[in-house]
Length: 575
Image (tube, rainbow, N blue to C red; front, side):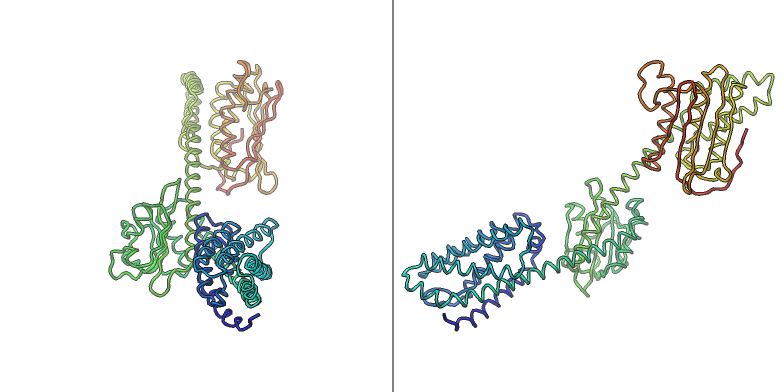
């Protein structure tokens, strides 16, 4: 055992560890740490650790026509970090290189280098399958075994045997001690790099959540001048960048911070980098003023990260974080802007879906409000004509009710009204029906005091009342009574009920008619289904219409709504 080799071998191993430390700053290296590396990145890792192994060979000490070296560090760490294939390929490249240098141990060293990489990779696979972490103690033990594996292969293959034995006796202890410690130190460094990556991710997530908490409400209206300005201001307050800008596909929507004197809101896109991101749909990092491509010669912005904002797989704009000469953009800034870009893109998608949903709901509501039943209009006009000659004053009142009925049908579309206003609309409809059917139609109101002030979706009860009159009472020879109730149930719920003592039904109005007999009754299901879908669209699945009915015993329709905003009380007609 030649202990004189210990000190120079330690010094050269330290140089190798410093070189490896520099490699930990490579992004592909960080992807490996998080077990997210692609095959392309793994190939890059093979290149990196092969270079470390080859450097360990060149940095070694020639001794008795052989090399006391730290080549094992690169191959073993490659296997422990990325698995058998990376370890094997790293060992193969480093082994071929060692073989090319010659010496009586060239073949033995080449084989041992390949074996060490594969051995370390198999250890990685074994521990990963058992969800165990590779710590520095494991690395120390594996490194020690790998070195003695190399010594055994040298004894088996290198010739003459006497020279091989003398070499192993001289270098085995220094190499196994120094290199196993070096492997353990490198694993510690890698673990620190992983913790740093986790810290960056946590900091980025924290900042993203801070920005998200204050900006998501702005983006509900989509990407507008107002929403972009508020989002940009909040990002600038949360981060340490010099400027933040947001554009759509044609112009600058917001620019806050440095450069706002010439990056003017409302003007067309001026920077080359922004146009490039809009074209390629990819993140761009501009490292120089020239890469940013600002036409203003005195612009203080020097660095930028630009992220496309996507909506329906198309670029809707660009989010840009700028920095001036005082500091460069950091890895935290890069992760932050990536996260914010994804966040804003997701919110724009949601805003678009919400907009489409609102448009669809409004279209359905307007269609419902615009439905003028030709039979109702025809019958109402005939009734009014018959009243004109003998009861002109009542005919006049009926015309007023008819006009009020259609005015609200056409102009209250999609809005919210007080329950009092909804009841007035119902009363306009019922006044005409009473004139037609006289004593066959009776209406009772049972409205709890104060409930009439609560807000409800417009035209939510009228279809239920019309359903009760047309399909519940009028088919009955003697007619009947409709009861309209409104009660406050619990603290935040108002219950609305329309009940009749008419003919009732045994079929579900929401199911398709199976025969002609049930088809007539289910014509009412058109209005009921529309009301049900509107309620669920506004308030969610738990809300809708509960219908209780039995043939010959009448029908009761019940709606429960979350209590909305109180509005000024309006008069409620109770007759």
